[in-house]
Length: 139
Image 1 (tube, rainbow, N blue to C red):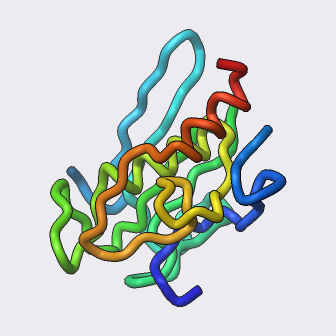
Image 2 (tube, rainbow, N blue to C red):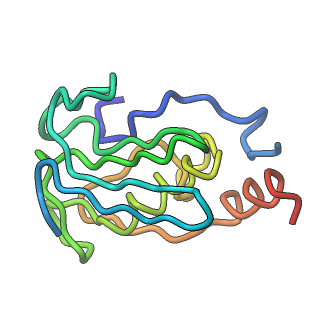
């Protein structure tokens, strides 16, 4: 568990498959029909009870449905492209949005909901991620 990772606890949903811009303090808010998602870059103890640990540890965290908070660790090297030595913003966002929708971590390393990512790595949705969302939302 020494690789950079998501801060959400590793609780796998039953089996190996799920069945059931700016820095420091900047925020973007997306709201639709009364539901709100707040995305920000935060550092160390930022007041939500889940402090970050500086570079090369916890990359981001998001809270379960109805909370809507999603924070990147501002002390990590971020990039909009999958560049060696930095973390891909979109891949980490896709993972954390999975948590916002109610997904837990996957035990399948190729899944975007796997708990860790390497610098320079980019991931899209894996069949396991899709199966998990389908199970949660009855698609």
